Length: 294
Image (cartoon, rainbow, N blue to C red; front, side, top):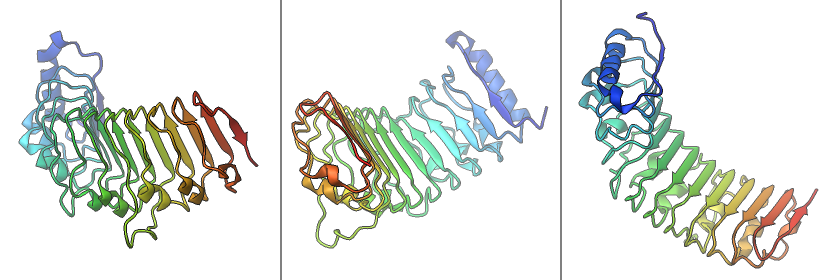
């Protein structure tokens, strides 16, 4: 039993809280070679400090553990951790110990803070996937986003008070996927400034869903990815009335899907002539058409 590599604990009712804590302590004490621990939707209120002894742990799933408001002091010792899901937890702030996880590649976060702590240089250098989920008080992304040099996917969901994206995203040359959902106050306007016209970014997919105040698209990021961007999807952004003419500069665009944008009445003239565009679809808009090219 001491060589157990994976533990998954499911369907834990709140009535079993004491049994659940005992079981976690048993796993931590006896399974020193544990690599994956899934405690999703657990009634736990705290992780044991002894969790820092799991030197081989690579995957820790605490999704929907609403009773967990802080992480143990020993958390930074999980130096082999590559995937950490803190989505749906009750964390008030992301502790410094998480930034010290040097191997982390996949990170999902829910916090109740207005601001996240600054990302320091040298932290999260291997991070490839970052999701901020239901951070209902969050007003801005953390300072230091430019240090996430390996980031490939950024997902923002249900961050109702998030107002803007930082211009530091322009330094994320490996970012391929940007998805923003139900961030109802966000303003994405981001025009290139002097010396920013020749950015070489790598976005491949760009997805927006239920952004109630959206009126503009982030030109800096999209036009900077003109040679790589293949897919744009915009759904239920009901204040969006115009698509910018500079979309015609996105020469690698293959799919452009628009749905439920009730104030969008026209597409940029000539968009159907983009040489790589295979599908242009609008549904639930004043302009409803489906253009197949190629």
